Amino acid sequence: MQSKKFDPKVFQLGYVALGTPDIERAKQHYLQNLGMTEVALGDDGSVYLSVGYNHHDLVLRPAAQKALLHVGFQLKPHITTADFARDVRETGLAATVKTDSQPGVAELVEVEGPGGLVIQFYDAIEASVPGFKQTGASPVRLGHVAIINPEGDKVIAFFKDFLGFVLTDDIAGIANFLTCNREHHVVNLVKAPESRVHHIAFELRDSSCHGIAADALRAAGVNILWGPSRHTAGHNVASYHHDPDRVMVEFYTEMDAFIPELGMSEPRPWHEHLPMKPRSWGHTELNAWSTDFAFNLATG
Ligand SMILES: [Fe+2]
Image (cartoon, rainbow, N blue to C red; front, side, top):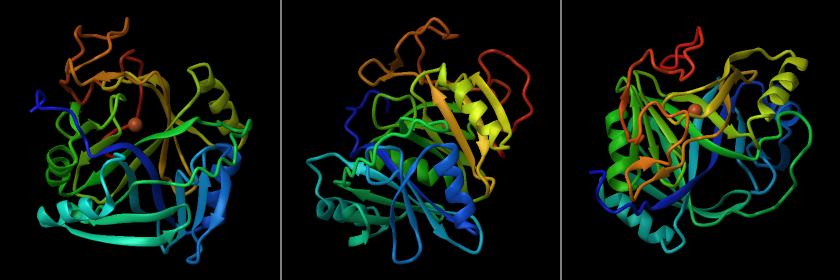
């Protein structure tokens, strides 16, 4: 399957929407500790937060309990929402075209995926450019999302067979890394009997910023759960913390660059395998540096 033409229907993750029981507390974390900017308030009380360029990268909506509401991906320019919706319906999944359902996105297709996963696809998002902050971790972009889903195999099949993602690695067959662009992973689909977000991941400007981000978090009383340390799958230098709702947030740099034409990642001095082709890592092989950690990536 890896040899078929790499031509995904989408090219990047756009945003993640989370339900939160304390929207003010959650919002302040992303504003103060990450340096995001509030750009809009929705009719339903949702707040729209931007890293610095796109209208939004994160949506927080009031909810009785924390929840993964939906994730958004941007369609390739030549794919219309009408054609995309038709193609989705032919797979047997429900797809609804929505106009003006959220600020910044005029039209989107909402798909009810397997296991309760709601995915939105859009061809354009407003570039409202609130600017990048110089406070907190100040990431440069939202890079990937890790999702736990009880129908993981069906979700993986949707991403691979329908959307055209390629599988770049897995960890013990549980965490499955897939990409639609040159980054090693844009989604990490975790097969487990739950339906929730595992973590959302923001890219920092470079690896020297991990210390700055960790200092900013600790100054705000936020513990670092793991890292900064280098992963095996993806080889990103990553650190994790919980937001106020205990949603895990990753900061990362130095993610492997995947070359679909060669079916391998760009060679790096720290790769354990050359060529670094997609492989299945053991569940004890999370850390390329073999530093101690007490963190279960499958259930954290
Ligand atoms: Fe991650």
